[in-house]
Image 1 (cartoon, rainbow, N blue to C red):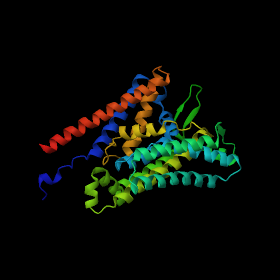
Image 2 (image 1 turned 135 degrees about the vertical axis):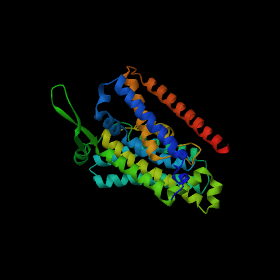
Image 3 (image 1 turned 45 degrees about the vertical axis):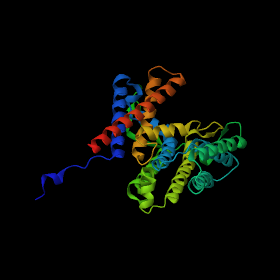
Image 4 (image 1 turned 90 degrees about the vertical axis):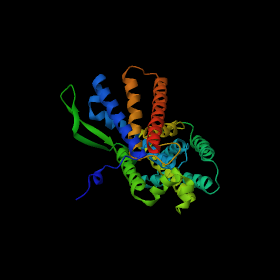
Length: 343
């Protein structure tokens, strides 16, 4: 027979604990919005709208989560996304092929990831400086391509963009009695697929475990035989590749390119990762938490708008307040856990 102590549950890791807190806060916040505000929050389409609007942000945040778990930072992701959008829309309007446009998006993102990874990992230049330079370069290239907004006129692309996945049983009945099904864009499917793949990478593959080991303690990772330079290099390559995918998903959602596309996306991605339980110091984080971090960030913005505070600065203020709250919460929770371990 097994002893009673054999059935003791293993305590949650820091990553699992912070992710659980984020999910609980999101659920509580959304339920509060349903009860107090009602309206669109009572329909499943509200959640799908949040996913449709933020599919590209989810993808970018997944890449940034990997970089932050490894103890790095990448502030160029928004600019790379913007460059991908403008490059693809101009190529498509010139009569290009949809498949080739996807390859262009992946190629641009991969190129930035390779350059950033090489400079940071093998030349040991500070990540903030390298990715800041990458951000300025990508923004400049986007402006060179076109200062004016460009709308995608490619018929095949417009047909692809208009494809919606309908879920009738999650729809709602309008005032005129018509059933309006819940609709989800193809970009959401891409975002969920990326989320699942990155989750598998981090949880079940050796490279993912190396990211955590490198971010937790680089010297310990070296002593364990982990090639830290190669691991850090791969984190930026993956982040760059996901930025390329994000750019194409962004284009599928908006159908247009602009020099100011995805402005501030890198800050929202960092905020989503932190709210989701990823530590800036590295070693702790999970893309599922990042996913709910993105939804939490979007929900608080929608609550602000639904409350009648339509001015854009209110959203910035609430985002800053939410970010400070989660950083403080992480410090308190992990601090108390560390004291218990010492005791």
